[in-house]
Image 1 (cartoon, one colour):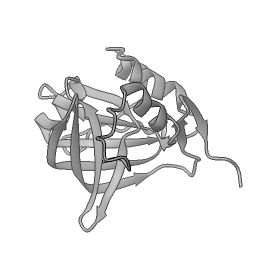
Image 2 (cartoon, one colour):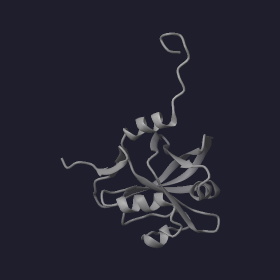
Image 3 (tube, helix red, strand yellow):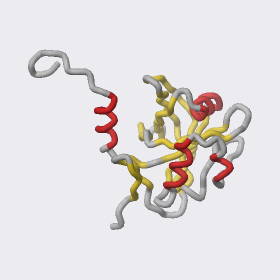
Length: 169
């Protein structure tokens, strides 16, 4: 309720989008292998730590995406945190290009979802512990089983509808 006692006005999607655009975030690529073993992935800035015990994070994925289907189908995924020079990779994985994995160096095995080693400062390998749908997205909780650190690098950031990097200190 507002101070006047009237119910608050419904927020427009544009108003909410504008507020969130002003909240910068790190940029990652969430990857998984689908049921046929094909790599899937999408750029994601909706990544959040949840708890240290057990180490858990969450990602928000577009529910109808092949990446979301692969994550839920296999029950495993990786969060590839992009470094300062990886804006082209963020744009590629946001583009929907079906050949995106043909244009990057990646590796995976039976237990690990695809890693993008040339473009990341860290990768978290996760197992899905729960998920739920919210609007047109699915919130996926993953217990982090392992973290692979890349060479020291500044993280790629996204905010105000553009990419940036952490400033030099």
